[in-house]
Structure formats: structure tokens, C-alpha cells
Amino acid sequence: MRWQETDQKGVFSRPISENETYIKLVGDAGLTLNREHWAINSAATIVPTGSFVPADLAARFRNAWAHLRFQHPSLAVEVAPDDTSFIYTVPADGAALDAWVSRTFSVATDAASSADMIPTFQPTPYAKLVYIPRSGELLGHTAHWRTDGIGVLLLLDALLALASGPSPLIDPASLAWGTEVVSLAPAVEDAAAIPKESTPELKERGAALVGTFAHTVGAVGIPYLGDAATLPAGTRSAALTFSRAATEKIVAACKARSVSVTAAVHASVAGANYALADPGARDKHYTSTIRFALRPYLPEPYSTPAFAAGLYTTGWMKRVESRASWAERLHNYQDEYRKSITRNFLDSHREYAAQLAELIRNLAAGPGWRAAE
Image (tube, rainbow, N blue to C red; front, side):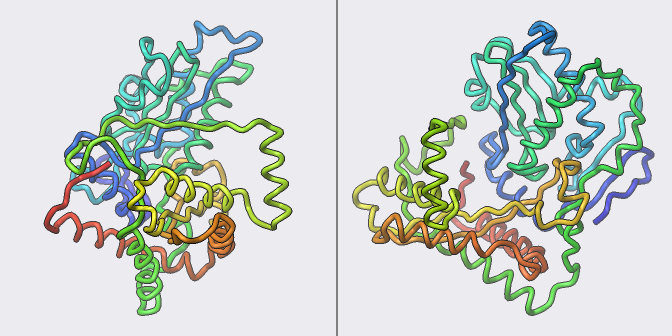
């Protein structure tokens, strides 16, 4: 599934992998509602210092965005019309590059913050970057099949490194376009050297992982405004920020108990779901995903920031019971996270993703299916 130049010069293609297919199917579930499930938004607040002039930032970020595409060409990858492959087109000239930048970079002068912009996003074939002068924010937006949560942070870091350099960036049109294709991200199946041919053992392991999704049936959820017929509205988020002192106490308490902060937070999220649930639903079990970044388990260079624009993540479902205490849930999650990622898991991941994709297709074909976000 490596990138290959097509019959058209400067146009490269590779098949969409099993893992990317699964993620894309989930995202596409909202298309009938002009939404995209699991799209990733990432934001950074910029505070210019020294010689950086706020009035120059929009032009600086636009230029850096074009350079970022050269470093990470997968930002410009699109889904082919056949919906089974990805396409990357090398800019033929400066005008073609500028056209791409104009489609994907914008300045939102009227928005107060990223919270205003995110609910307005609709499905787009491109990765996008928005500069919001009033809040000083840079807002990235992309389909999940293009990258993951760690990847978008690495991309933001690379963008800011480009934009904050001591010397002005050269005209991006003068970069050696055509050579950037060596940096097109491979699928995780290739990056991790996952076996191409399945075996009964791999099928069994994949089925066991898919089986964890059965825990979602009958699980507790958080009440929402409306009912089952209510269409999804714009994405909103809320954050709770702890002080440095409180954070240090939390970390110390976790270390004293030989558990990770991740497991402790996960146990608290489960508790919050029960606290917010309808009283009649609080005897149900709680199901959520155990998430792992696959980047640390990949060989170089795929484990490095050079391949930030690649989808290298995984997860499975974990169930905890309503009657369990916070401490019991904590240790349940700690045991799950301690499993880490093994070579056997990686080898079965192609089969796992393929079976998940088939599960979603069967659900979509069944009665009562309605796209949700």
C-alpha cells in the first residue's frame, strides 16, 4: 500500500488501509447531516513578544502553512472519487500552491474565539488552518483519517517553529516541490510491518478486540437536550484547569498508589457519567475506550514528528460496573493501560480494523440506522 505515482505526472496514490477505512466510515456517518464525526480540532493561543508584530501574524502564519505542507504533504491528501484510495498532487507551480493555501487557510476576523468557529465547520476534503485575531488563536481542523490527537499537536508545534523563526521564510513556491512526496505518510499497517495475509490466529485476536464493542450495548450515558429525533448541533467543549499546586498533588498521589494519572482521570470520568446520568440509568455499566498512541511502537522514522500527518492510534472498549467504587474502577483501568501494545496486538491490527469496518457496514445496512455525531 505504498505511495505510487499514477499515469498522471505529479499525482500520487495509495489504497486506503483497513485502519483508515474504519476511521473514515465512522467519520462519514455524519455526512448526511452535513457533519463529520470524529473530526479533530486543535488550537493554540499565540502571544507575540519581542519583534513580532500582531498585524503581521496572518501573513506569517499563511506562509508557514505553505511550508508545513512541504514538510508534511499528507496535509494535502484527498480521498479519490472511487472512495478507496488517497490522492496527492504535487503543486505544478506557484499559482497551484497559492490556490491550495487560499482554500485551506483563512483569517476569521469576526469570530471571538475558536469556540465560535468550531461549531460552524462542515465536512471538507482538506485539512484547514484558521487564524482568529481577536483571541490570538490558531485553529487546525482535519478529518480523523488524516492524523490523530498526538499528530495534530506535533503539527501545531512544527507550524509554530516555522512561523517563529528568526529569519523570514523563503517564498514557499521556491521549495523543491516534487521531492516532498518521500514524506507522504504510510498507513500504519505498512509503518508497523503488519502481516498482509491473515491467519486463523490473527482473525481470532481481531474478533476478540471487536467483541469489546459489545460492551457499548446498554451502557450508561449522559442526558442531553432533546430526544432520539434531535439532530446534532455544533461541537462544543469545556475544560477544567487545575493549578500547578493541585496538579502536583494529583501526580504525587498517583505515584504513591503506583497508578497512572491517565487511569485516575479515566476513573473520574466514569464517576462523572454516573453523577450526571438519569437516576433510572445509574445501575447500568459504563463503557468507554482505552486509547493508545501507536507512534512509540513504530520504527523510525514513523515514530518521529516527521510523520505527524499519519493516523497512528488505536483503542478498544472497556466496561466497568455501576456498583464499583472509584478505587476499584481506578485499578480496573490501570490494569488495562498496563497491558500496553504488544507485537501480537500489532500483528492482529489489520484484521481488527477490517472486522470493525465490516461491523459498521452491517450496522449501516440494518433497519433503524441513523447517522449520528
